[in-house]
Amino acid sequence: MEPRSLVAAIDQGTTSSRCILFDRSGRPVASHQLEHAQITPRPGWVEHDADEILERVRTCVRVALRETGADARALAAVGISDQRETTVVWSRRTGRPVHHAIVWQDTRTAEACERLAGADPRGMDRFRALTGLPISTYSSALKLAWILEAIGPEQRAAAEGGDLLFGTIDSWLIWHLTGGIKGGVHVTDVSNASRTMLMGLESLAWEPELLEAFGVPAAMLPEIRSSSEVYGLGVGDLAGVPISGDLGDQQAALFGQTCFDAGQIKCTYGTGCFMLMHTGERPVHSGHGLITTVAARLGEAPATYALEGSVAVAGALIQWLRDNLGIIGDASEVEKLARSVPDSGDVVFVPAFSGLFAPHWRSDARGVIAGLTSYASRGNIARAALESTAYQVYDLGVAMVADLGEALPAELRVDGGMIRNDLLMQFQADILGRPVVAPPIAEISALGAAYAAGLAVGFWSGLDELRSMDHAAHRWEPDMDEATRAAGIARWHKGVERTLGWVEPGA
Image (tube, rainbow, N blue to C red; front, top):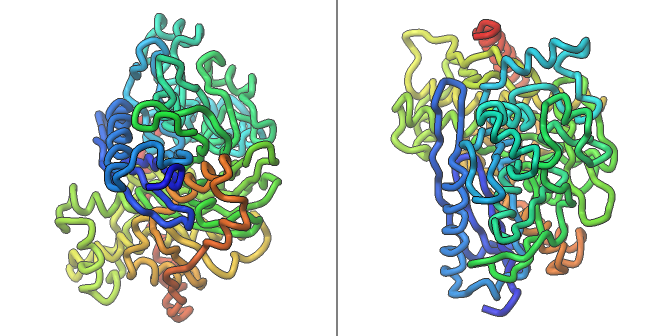
């Protein structure tokens, strides 16, 4: 293997970590993936063991390199894509977390959200003008505040003195991969920082007003950097390799889809489901339940922004059918089961397991399966589960149209593990009334992280070269009559209404 002929991407997701090695054409040449435990100590609580994630990432890097018969000398750079809002607090002295990481899906801060929103006439939009985000259980700030409260006054004092460090998973990984307690770099990028509710959307800096509101000591925060620059050099299996790309997973997917220009749109179908539309160098503030977020910043260039709609449960619902309901033995079986029936039989499945995210933002919602009759079968439930993802994406598209005052682009670019499900992708095209287009590789967040890292060290010359490597692998054209489409959407919205108000305030 020639020296510096590959770029490594570490794609750290909600259920697994992977390392993929890409060549100059953007083709994956080796990869390894490992799952990690989902820790659910109470209903609505979701945690990860950050030490386990770190060890699995290191293993993935080691095995991926072994597949090529190479070592770190083959790598020009390393990029990281991560699960964004998931929150870690660790000791600068020991390198160990002081609490399990609190995952983006976690809803333990719902009551704190209500108190914070209730203390201001702007309610849940109290900080939206500054951060682009509504107050919700989603963002990192209240998760961090919860950990600081849980670990007690002595540890709180350590945080105020800078002996405890906060970060999303990217910060945790970069700190360890660049040396950890022996001089690890404590940084994050603008895309991840924009998801904490602690950074100003336009200042691209930690805002004192927000730190005070959430009770967060500034001393524990990482330095905010661009998404594409050299943060530090790797150690261990990555010895001497520049760590030079960092993007939240959904922004990484936008980048990997080469959506570099205003008006381009993509949707990622993974554990959750995330639709992002690039809005250029100006943040567009949503009046219809969407998030305004930083898309990326390349070196010293101006930051770019996106509108985002997020769905909490997409692929996770298929895992639930397997693990909790037991109607499939493996996630790959769901399409065959769904195809065993001609339609959902009027069954609607709204998977509001942790409340509803965009465009509703209702933490009081809980999941329902509605429209059951004696006719309903396992196949109808499986089909309704797949359709729920497409309907949730449709609702995000409607909100984007309302915010921008213009129709959706002519096609939707898609990626993520669920795009392997042909039935789902066809149904998505039918419900949107737009072609759905997939790239050659499904897991494109990793490619976006690789692109950001490679650009920083000159492995690729610029955005035009990346655009030239963009290819479509599959295309689904809409093929549903308008009456069927409208009836399905109306039925879906009836189901959504029945999820609301399920959890009493303070429960």
